[in-house]
Length: 354
Image (tube, rainbow, N blue to C red; front, side, top):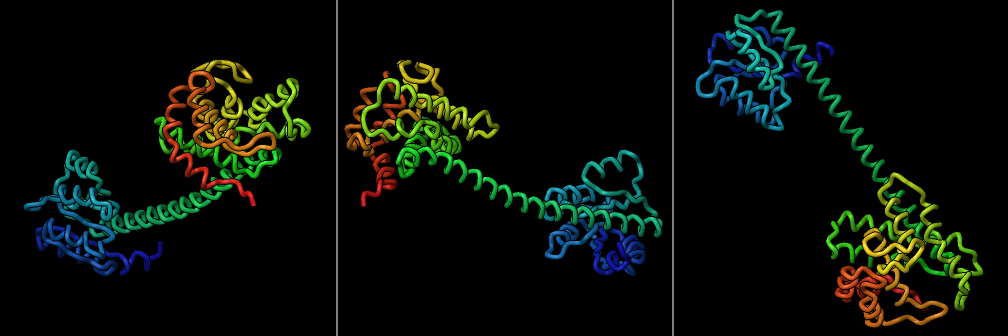
């Protein structure tokens, strides 16, 4: 650091109730720094909390009303003054006295009578160290902000890839992608009303969009067949659950882990007669049970080449009838009670029939 940087641009506050001590320290420092003085702790605090606080404080310990230790404690408690270097200047030279000052956050300890070269050296050193700390803190803040922006960009890209991955199977199935959007929002809605937190429901919203990813691997002549599937053809369709899980793999991402689980289990049934693994009841993970209801409801209320769309009431009636058979009975009862919210989702993401 140059002498100009340590010179008049830096301000030092001297706090002492003895005028002679103020004169001595002021005489040592005023040729190199802008010097302010305070004759008691209250004035010192007023100066420190002003719009232009000092860069360093030389603080006496033994003062009436507020002693130096209390002034130091108050300054270190306040966010705007906690980083100002404080050097105690006192006749108290016992080890216990020094420890008390350092424990309060003091940067150094000068013993009276002071030595001018020592005072100048200590003040210069602590101002330089303070500048370096501020520079480092600024660099960390800038870098942190840059990383936050980068992380947001990566997260947005990650989300977009997941959305597109989920919609890929729908395009193979001659869908517009709206099935994925409606179904995943039904799952989010049900999850919230079943007691999951907002962040958990948001993860499910994203993960559920990948439930039919495995359809990418189903041959066109089966997947796009307009009529009823044969038993063998349906067996091939059933492989899309395991296939979707294997496509996603075993990722570290929480969203993709949920997505793999949903892909594998969204066709399991509460009574154990679903596929691919015939898992019953609570053996089916919660995300699979939630997704089963959202998926079936949207399939029932959507037009397909082989069927017309069911009414909302008819679809909800079937969900209620299948409680304890196809669906988790508690979740089915909750879903049936969400008719108004379900209709809002349907209207927001309705098919374009033009």
